[in-house]
Length: 110
Image 1 (tube, rainbow, N blue to C red):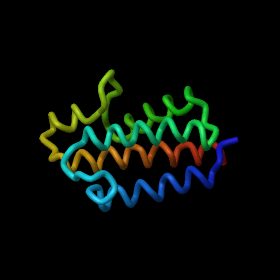
Image 2 (tube, rainbow, N blue to C red):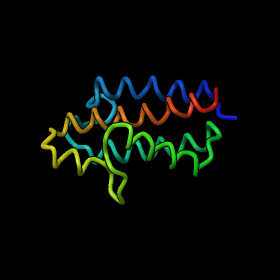
Image 3 (cartoon, rainbow, N blue to C red):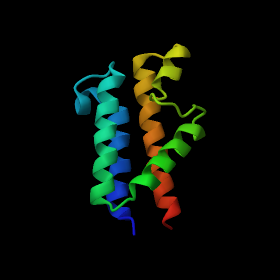
Image 4 (cartoon, rainbow, N blue to C red):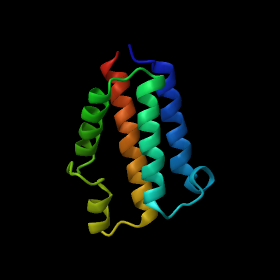
């Protein structure tokens, strides 16, 4: 059973990161820093919130598709760069994809 309270806290923290990335990441113009941060959170959630790793990957892919991006060996930020999004826009979009991932975990476990 997924720990809903812990997932809820992750969603709340991502909202703060989206609003003030420089405060939480130290930068506001480097999507690579955010990707490393999000990767760490994803793996931590699997442990502390008791989420199956295969489910996490599946839901992450679903979240990427839900935002109109393709799942590739690389993060969807490459597509965002091709669309000429600014680094700040890419950071915001990557955070929104993660929020969709965690919300879908809560929806699944309802």
